[in-house]
Length: 420
Image (cartoon, rainbow, N blue to C red):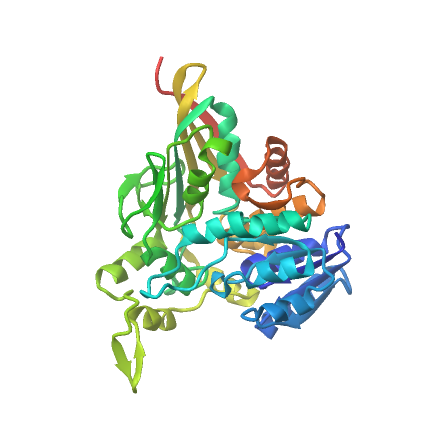
C-alpha cells in the first residue's frame, strides 16, 4: 500500500497519520478533516519528520461523494471520523474499491420514536450488508480498532488459548486520570455522554440484550489501584461482538459484559440522576427548543486537542494519573474450572505525553488503532469482507501483541484454578 487517506485527524487519526509517516511502505498520506487547523497541524508534524509525505484537505464527511472524490486512488481509508456521520466513509470505500479501517462500527440515524441509534443493528449491517460487498471487490474492511474496542478485543482473543471452553467474559476499563481544572473527559464530551446515557448491551445466557444506564454497579479491585472502583454497565462494542461471534471465536461463550468506571462515569451519573442528560427538547431559549443533553454538551469544556493545551494541563499538575484495563475469562481447561486474568499495562497520561505527545487515553487508542493499520500495510490480513478486531487469527493476534509490546503496551496473564 502506498497511498493512505486518514479521515478525521483528532487523537486517533493524527496518531495514525504520524505513524504512517514513519512507515517505509507508505508513499503519501492524505490528512482530511473539516477542521483545517487540525489538518495543518498534523501535516506539518508529519512532513517535519518525512518531508513531502503528507498533504491536507478539508472535507465535509457528511457527504459521501466528497469523501469518494478525495479517496479515488488511495489503497486504504483509515476512518477516524465521529460515528454521527454514519456509513459515508464505508460507502465511499466501496465506491472507489479500496480497503477500509475504522475505530468503531459506524452509526445509524435515530428512529421515528427519537430513540438513539441501535448499535446492534449497525453491526448487523456491517457484517451482513457491507461484508459481502467488500468480498465482491476483493477488499478488506477492519472495524473496531482503537483501544476499547480494538486492543482489548485482541486481549480477549489471546485469553482463549488458555481455555478449552469458555462460559463468561468480563471486560473492565477504569480511567482515573483527573486534571486539577474542570475536565471530566479527555475525549469528545458529546460522544462520552452519549455512550453514558444510552442503554448498554450485555450478552446474557446466549442472548444480546439491553439494560439500564449505570446499572450493575459494583466495586472492583484492580492491581496497582489503591481503592476499589465502582464499575457500571456501559454501552460499548465488545460485548456485542463477543455475542455475535461466541461460537466461532470464543469457544461457546454464553455471557459477556463491559463495565466502565472512573472520573467520567461519576461525573455523568450525577448529571443523569438529575435529569440533566435528557434528550427531550424541553428547554425554550429565544424560541429555539433544546434538550438538557445539548446544553450540557455545550457547557462542558472541550477535550484538549493540541499539544500546547495538553502541556498546559499537565504543567498545572494532575489530581490523579491512574487506570486499569482487565479482561477476565471463565471456562474450563483440561477438565477443570479456571479463570484467565489479563491486565493491560501501558504508559500513564503524563508518561505517554512525555514520550509521544499523546495522553494515556490517546496513546492506547491511537497507537492501538495504528497497529491494525500496520497489519494491513504488511498484508497480514488474508480475510476479505468485513472483520472486527475480535476476529483475528492466532498468528494475527501474536503479530499485533508483538508490535504492541514494542510500544510498551504489555499483557500480564495469569490462569487461576477455580476447582481442583
